[in-house]
Amino acid sequence: MKIESFKRAIDYIERFFHLKNEYAYTLNDLREIFDENREDWKIAAYRNSYDFINFLQESRILYVNGLDGYDNSEKKIWTKEDAVNYDIALTIRKGGYLSNYTAMQIHNLTLQIPKTIYVSIDKYEVFQTKGDIILEQEAVDSAFSNKQRMSTDVFVSRKDKIRYTFLHKKHNSIKVGIINRGRFPLTDLERTLIDITVRPAYSGGVFQVLEAYQRAAGKISLPRLNDYLNKLDYIYPYHQLVGFYLEKSGYQKSELKFFLDQVSNINFYLTYGLTTKKLDKSWKVYYPIGF
Image (tube, rainbow, N blue to C red; front, top):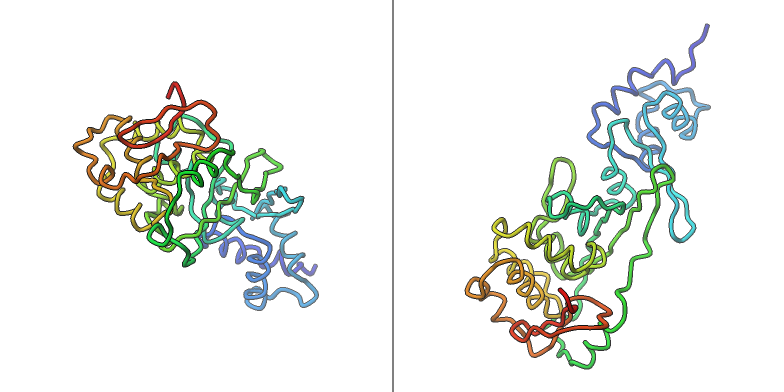
């Protein structure tokens, strides 16, 4: 009896995926794999990439994961049996790195287990920097009086309801403080602290951010933290917030000269939408009452 060509080639196909370092695949990835290998695998001419994908699923070589986008779009990611959610996250949008609350969890900066995985994607763009623009207090007050705008580039897993949120960041310097932990790119300790300071809503809020600083105390390089801030060159004076958090987590002002020297003439905000607040006069930072 004639054996169907996919079944005849199953050992080669299984070996191919076993040897690949990738653990998750998009539809286009699988189409390319099929087109590049069908001749070597001697797949019948009437078979196409959809037949190939069905075979992978039926043979349990790969498993399909359905995702629903916030814009009502749908997406599928195929994974190996031993893939984890980080593999899916970094495949939905390629070229990114794990960040914010997710990086906090990986670096043991939080005891929480977030149901959202955050992936940042850097885009190089030359734009106005703090050297090109003069901040006005009134404009800062207005910008931070409202809630933080949230990313709508979000997919939710139908299987386990994990939310995948993608943060698109424009910087003059990209890939600052990005390391690899195994097969996963992510922000290092110092870059993680900066990211969660800049966007606390993606990090559990300011109390979780403070806990992260406290758990990182003694493990971070203050010169590296300052260097990253300078490279990222934010228009807003985030040196003030970082210094404020560092002092709150146990550092002495004598250790924080990098940050104190860069305190601006602007009273800045620990987070968006503060309704009741106090001002730390040395750091010129508004923070919530009870913080």
